[in-house]
Length: 487
Ligand code: ADQ
Image (tube, rainbow, N blue to C red):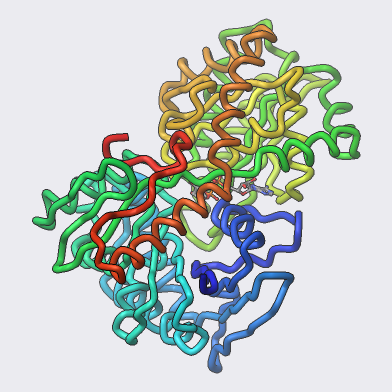
């Protein structure tokens, strides 16, 4: 097999075990460090003048090839079309969608430019795996540059229902561009279904169901494959990190602060899709309605700011600071602050150890492609005395984690009830729910996610080359590892 070439907007400056607030960085790096290969993308630097140059660095089995963006490219491609248009639309926030046709032109221009930068680094047998919404036109651009390699795409965020996608003016160009990939991967079957719905009802295309393995789609004069590949974590590695950190300083400090109170814990990038305001209000409702919980429970919200130069993100930050101040002002006592709201990033080992200390993992996004925090929280628990996951039905993870208490993140009373139930849940029920979820997390870890996607991508070429038409090998049978439209 040729090298695996990962392409994503941001190539994270990851040092082993260090902080990496972003699910794509965590998942992709975990997947790539096992197989080795190259990771290509933006360095995170923005230049006001000069000419960006590719920087190639070897770190263990992984070669990092990064390049800076010019200021205008950053504004149009990253802040503009990717994060002011696609991000809100794909998270069902049509009310927040901002569209500027010049930003879309910039988005396409940067995709074409990045593709041209990658071409000289490619070998004929490389397999290219492109990640996320910043790079939807990337395969089209590589094909225009004559690249014939297999190219797959994985969407880390939700794929919206057609009626929501139509709010993005160049929706048709975007879906046509997606059809230049050989294989499309989505987080869940509802995302896959939404994409197929667009293909059939808006693009006049067709979908051939498969008994197992990816669907075959025909649209815009091309045939491609598509399936759901839910991203995972390494649950046993996280469990070890969490156990090792149990007696560490962060956990000791946290326990000293708690004074035997119970802990509800959330970790998110500070983003309006994560449902933080509703979450704070549901915690407030818990304190209002279950007065016995006052001074008996604290809520730790860790939320490092991201995209801080965008208005929508400044707004959510201000709103949350207002809410936490208001709720603390209302309920705090001399020896108790109900909400601890922290903006810092932490090392993965510290987060894992804190998760193990928390009686409730409180993960309630309004929409989320998957949500790795939900999976990390469960993985970090002590099997003898596990905590309870309270999880939004709109996180992709809710498709898999049946053992969680599933909530609707706009139902403040419902979430407050779920918190109360989680805080009081008997040990036997907590253990049973934890065991169920761990079976699922182990069966569908990051390697399974990567291997299933890569096998299907390789399988497409094998089928094409051999012209056998016999399709791909049978699946490994692991539940939810590859869901089809029927799944
Ligand atoms: P994100 O929106 O970033 O990811 P998520 O999946 O929860 O969301 O991943 C966040 C990651 O960053 C987790 O691994 C978490 O531990 C880490 N993290 C968050 N805050 C941190 C902090 N303060 N310090 C250190 N680490 C922190 C996108 C999609 C998701 C999808 C992932 C992966 O939006 O839906 O699950 O990609 O596909």
